[in-house]
Amino acid sequence: MSDPMTVRRATVGDVELVAPLFDAYRQFYRTPSDLNLARTFIRARLEKGESVIFIAVLANGTATGFTQLYPTFSSVSAAPILTLNDLFVAESARRLGVGKALLRGAAEYGRANGAVRLSLRTEVNNTTAQRLYEAEGWKRETQFYAYDLTL
Image 1 (cartoon, helix red, strand yellow):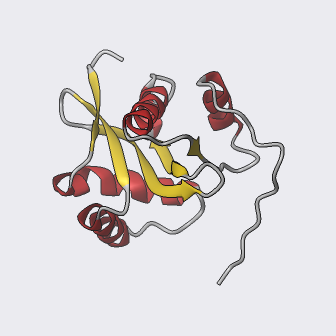
Image 2 (cartoon, helix red, strand yellow):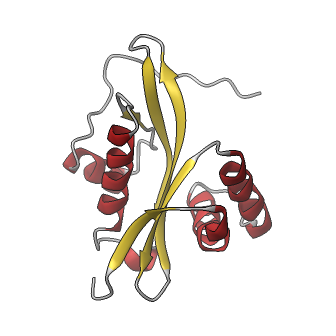
């Protein structure tokens, strides 16, 4: 990447940088584009302190990716964990180390804040992301099944 990149924690002042990436992320998962919904959702998470968002920003101010972490707890470990719910890299910045930098930033944040693990889920057919996760030391869960109940 010719333009230096920085990964930093997003603030409410970064909503306009994060929202288009969040909207593109949702489209990747086959939801219609809705930039106003993306802005509202991201703003609410940041204002309420309900999530931690890291953004990758080029020196020219262009945001190239983001990850969103939701804090929760492990009852068995009796300790905090983080759910890495969202990770997205703009198509123009893929294969340039942005995803790796965001994953590393999330892991550093988790360690610094006493989390015992980061967890994530991805679609079975998202093999590109799976290769990145595994290259960064993430292990595929094989002991438990995941279930969802649509409400």
